[in-house]
Length: 353
Image 1 (tube, rainbow, N blue to C red):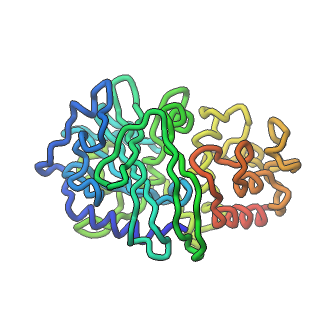
Image 2: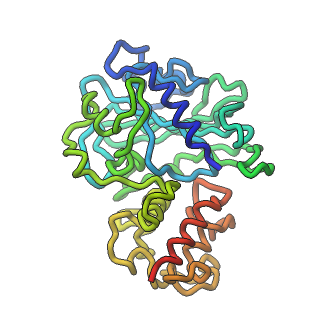
Image 3: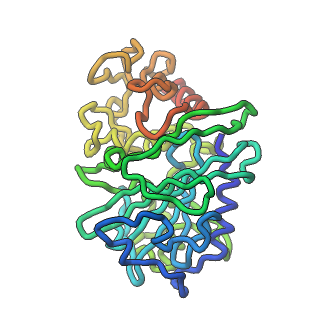
């Protein structure tokens, strides 16, 4: 359902007006570091044109090789680093960003996914702010006029009505997360942390104004990132929709991005014993012939998380294709299923022996 080509071309157009380190529209570091976030998104100064999602100079767009599925929302990602500061490279986890960093992500839905470049409706913009005592997460809800977004600490519900890629009407209630829900997904060892900007997710090309370039190379050259080794030494996540990539890598990448923020030893689902990080190399730990920690309706009367060769007997596919609260996984961030992802995981499980 996602039109990734459109998103990439639109962000590339944004990048054409961005030159890191050039004189910028006034981005307020004071607002970024304030104990209380501003009421309006515009007060940060992150965008030269809010409605068009055109970033101010010093705010850099980026993309992930495989993004998290969020009800099929299109997403626009940006990073702001305070002048003279750089993130520190990490080979496995999210980069170590300096105090004063902002990670910005806007969620939007087109009126018709077959014409995704037309009538794009901005729904929310999430902002992660790096303070001296850790990260702060805030969600901003866009107004009907699409002129600005307002802080929503308690979250919100938004009716979405669009046309899916199959030409059929698609309607559901989208959730803007409340403060506690942000913590639930972004928890790592009990602290809020970014999820997307990891070496393996950023080790892919981006269409910048000066031409296509690897993002890690670009960040390093722009003094946004320090300590990165040669590209040949950096892991690279697959684009899960790239059918030319190995099936196992595509499926494991999808699970890593969509599930492993909880299903890992340091995450809130550690008690399940199901660990879905890409680097997990013990099959039973990522579900192969592993019984669930607690039986119930979430298992769909299936015995193991993954039964090699038999997706129809695997709890994993049952929960990913479900839209029933208390059964579906991930349990937050979506209300509809992604049939393409279900198909991928079924093909992967069928290939296991």
